[in-house]
Amino acid sequence: MKPHEHLGTAATPDGSTLSLYRHDGDYSLRIDGVPLMSTRQSMSEQRLAEVACAGVARIEGPRVLIGGLGLGVTLTSALKLLPHDATVLVVEIVRDVISWNQNPDYALAGPALADPRVELRCGDVARILREPGSGFDAIMLDVDNGAEAMTTSGNYQLYAGTGIRAAKDALRPGGRLVYWSATEDQAFANTLEQAGLVVEVLKVPTHPSSKRVNVLFSARRVSKR
Image 1 (cartoon, one colour):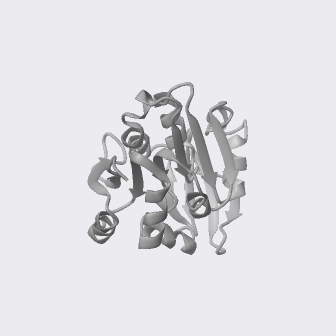
Image 2 (spheres, rainbow, N blue to C red; image 1 turned 90 degrees about the vertical axis):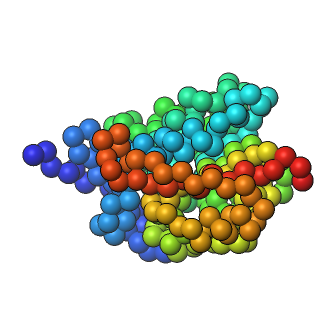
């Protein structure tokens, strides 16, 4: 059996330990030793991009926000769907995660980050959402395991009422906000609806042959303001 190769360790803003591993050509992230994500089990991260970008290709000069770079799966998938005049803002709070993706020795998102459509920022996506005049056509948020923050405790604000309203306000009318989650969460879906968003909950296998599923909360802002 091939060993799991430990490639790097980083600290999250609240002191948790994030580690990068490689095994038989696949990459994975663990938080305090607990599996967080992997390129092998990444079907839901790909689907996140597909759901968020549906219809965006028909918009002239669309603006898209991806909160959470991770292993770069969602970014790579989104770029395949978006037009040449799109702008994709990627926000990642852990600088080492950016460095790992940019490392040419790792088969991660280096080429995607070098795409001229991509703007990369190291910081808190919650602050980006509060910037005036954001005007995004699609927002993808994959910053944690879900509303129960696992990576960084501060991520909780993105799933609370004020964070959801900030994300909604950052959308253009008709825009789509999609959250990735490891598990179902009816209370979170209800909170999205209470914010005035049209919500669809999608279950996606982690791998074509897996029975385990992750959940996407797709929330659309109605066209009128």
